Image (tube, rainbow, N blue to C red; front, side, top):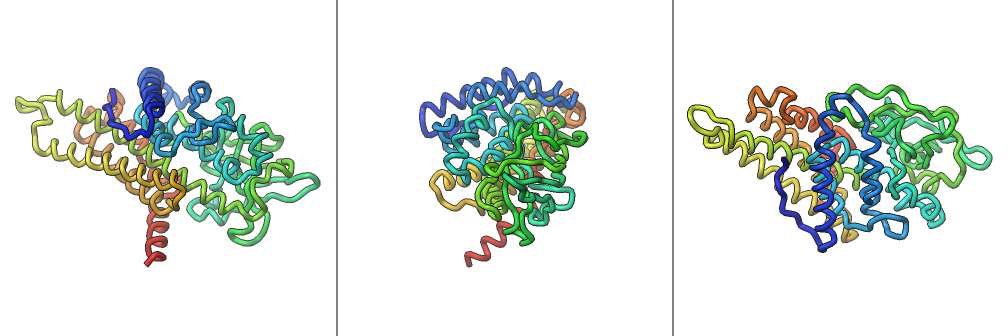
Length: 384
């Protein structure tokens, strides 16, 4: 069971949406999570189901098949999903990220032709920025897009790609010029393109139900209309997408931490030692107080950043802050949950150990927390 969270929602319709998501997460996702994670099985049918109920295009315009929900609502949906199954929540966040380039930088013709299918539920997306030699230093990417008659030919390898090998479309950043940042362009590549393949999935510590793999581009030919934005705008597009994506990761972290907190509270109230529930010991109650405070603070931080995004204000610094704080908080909360459960926290009979393993990756994906500190420091110092 997961604790009830008092939500800040703008309309009765958004409240109904969250109620539906909460029910789906508890009744359909949570029962599958343990088995799929243990088997390392990718839940493709779950994403199809989420698409059918409209959860794969939440922040995008209704005219293209989206739900046109504010980011504050979308992120709370992500949090609810993460409290039941992080692999699914992060997958929805990555799918939303992969559609960001087209939705925000594509032409009207491109959006009309491609976006409805991408966010309508049937197709699943992936975002290809990182490479074996360029992770935090994203501008060091070497995948190339050569101009050919009628389009482009892509060659290179992308690394750490969520949905690698199972996605229906890939948003790919590739080099069209030599300038470190202005020589990068953005392309939309179909998953069944000739020459596109994936390596074996990575054998990960956690989120084993999420498929992560290298994506190999070997003379992949795409038409000219699959260039998103102008040549040389790819790095700008990538960074804009990451600002939004970082809020998705923050919401994922809050969801996992909330689940771990709920588990710890339930255990502390029922586990008896020295003739009383361990919750009555000050050492435990203080740990739970700190955990609850961290969860609430992180939720408030990502919602504050989302409100800036919804208002059309710059939110890059706030997104980095939310991602940094929420994921560090999640690591601490899940660590404490394992400690409160003691030996029970270290075995797979209880979900605390899974939350602990899953939380670590959130400090790494979509910009390590060291990179977030660089972003925040640079932006704050520039404002002085």
